[in-house]
Image (cartoon, rainbow, N blue to C red):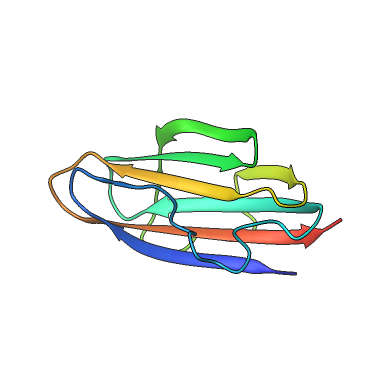
Length: 110
């Protein structure tokens, strides 16, 4: 099962348009089940998740944890990705300091 683990520092008062940009699995190679968790090391970040045309999470406060999401307990977001769908995880930092954001995506071919 393919997986994506991403850890980025989101700069103060800025937005990272896609924390999984550049991953070999950013674009779906076929129909697959996406199970995803996103965490931030501090309050003040907001996450938006899209898979192709599907909006999985409208901009919302990010789950706070200083580690990668725990499987399966913190894999809150699920979707069926079709071939060539792009996974986009945007994180916006509204604070005056940098914040670490982490994402774990498990991709199960269907």
